[in-house]
Image (cartoon, rainbow, N blue to C red):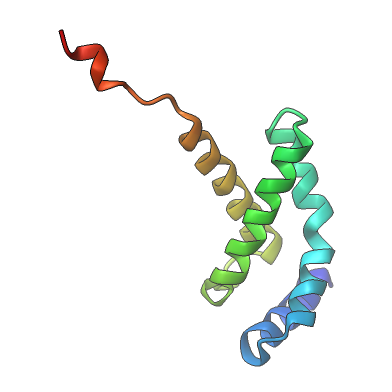
Length: 102
């Protein structure tokens, strides 16, 4: 039943550009996404909050690409996971060219 309600909200967001529908969709899933990201970040609540915010921005931007091949929640968690991976990649130490110059 929840997936049907999500689909109804997604339809309103896409066709009517309804901010109220997006707010409801976000509120419905934000605690689960935050808890998931909190687990991935090892309990860093401020990082989890930042990543959750980034996740929902991406959801809003890409909602029209949701094809309903899986549940909305699965799609949402994939975006959250990718936000976490993007964060990890951005934290990766870069090689310093000065280390190679004699």
